[in-house]
Image 1 (cartoon, rainbow, N blue to C red):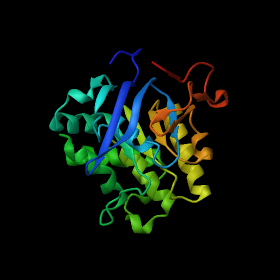
Image 2 (cartoon, helix red, strand yellow):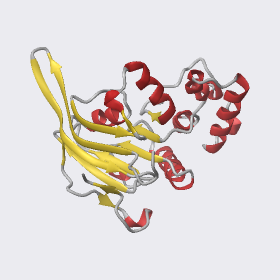
Image 3 (cartoon, rainbow, N blue to C red):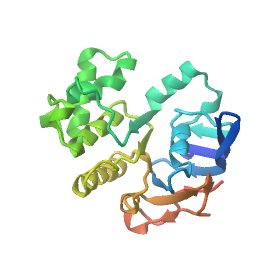
Length: 246
């Protein structure tokens, strides 16, 4: 992927779901680009389509129509096996409820995405330990999720998202299950990863305070973008457009 190309390009993307014989529209002609190194917050009321849009960008779900190019790949053209391989190489996931394996310790949870690679056990362990160090949990790597606070569990989940050095990090309500102090710690960590490690981040949130950690905010309502241009926060990024509408 050329350095000047966007990490994410959506052009006229549509998505519907079926409930029996009823067709329910979810996304209606979504178009925008996300440049490398951006931190975008997607906001909107429940049912607005923001999590669906995140899942399409991450290759978890498929659009009905439209162009969706992520990390230089037209993901609509990939079969399931190729799509799974693409996700493993390019996407790091952060979920609201952490999705950690309770019987595994922090290091073992972080290692899980690397089991799909050809790395040796020693290399997987080293990468997991490095990722946990990045999120400030080097001293908790032998602890199981039940021995960690909610904020610590979410930092383990962030380390898991980072361990394969993905092109794009997608976060679905990453602070939704946390108290205010822990949420602040997680958001500051995401900002640092964006600023210092250059990670491109797309975060779904309903919390305005969480969204303000991002470079730009885009609003969805009933499957349509309701901001003609994103709200750019100059205090957290240099002057200039964070995203470009196509």
